[in-house]
Length: 103
Image 1 (cartoon, rainbow, N blue to C red):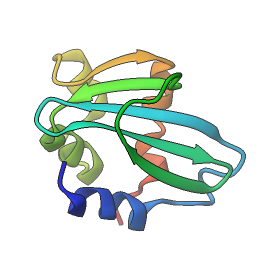
Image 2 (cartoon, helix red, strand yellow):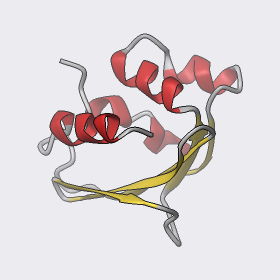
Image 3 (cartoon, rainbow, N blue to C red):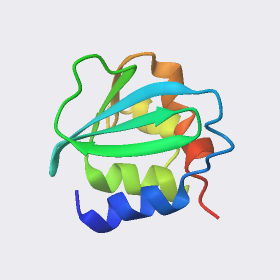
Image 4 (cartoon, rainbow, N blue to C red):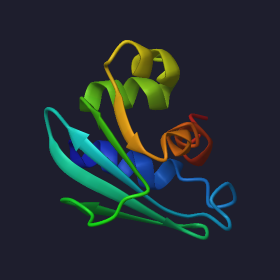
């Protein structure tokens, strides 16, 4: 995953939407290694590597994430077609577009 995509996540993060939320989103990118996001009551930390106990783990390509974040790919249909795999608290994955609104 390029630093630009990580920077975009930081800049798009909606602290208000994350108020009261304490979750770890693990990403396994088929083309870019592992990263995880720690959302803690309105703050966001992005780390490289793997978290010991993530709330939800998502496996996809970085292009799929970009498409979902841009609204070009429906996250649910990506999940149904196997482009996105999720384990753990799968419902949390649906919160991503709320936490990182497009515009």
